[in-house]
Image (cartoon, rainbow, N blue to C red; front, top):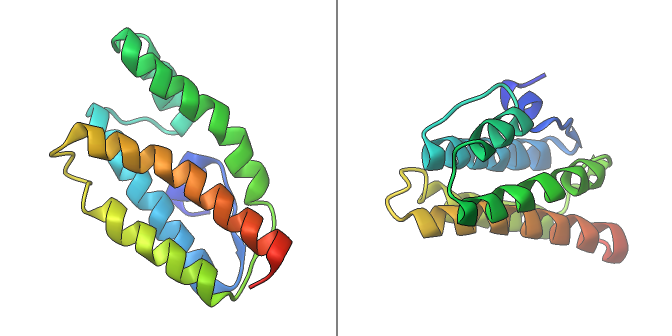
Length: 133
């Protein structure tokens, strides 16, 4: 399994173009998370737990959000990713937006990208599952 997918605790299956795009987005968000806090760990949970010990109180709200969203992300990704132009182009757009923030020049934007990542992916998968391509 890909190291980034292991870090997130997900397995992606389905259309190869969709898998590749979503894998890239997951990788970018991993890099954002690690760059934002200047910390690394073997899994996202390990990183969140490590950070929780020494971040200010206002950052704990963000870390709690990540903890709460991980099970949803994993549950939603347990299906065959479709060959959907809408899904793939939406993921590619998120890649474009998020990759610009990897250097964490503006920390608020980097945090926003991570928060947006969770909601956008869940919304896109919900759209695909319930409304088609």
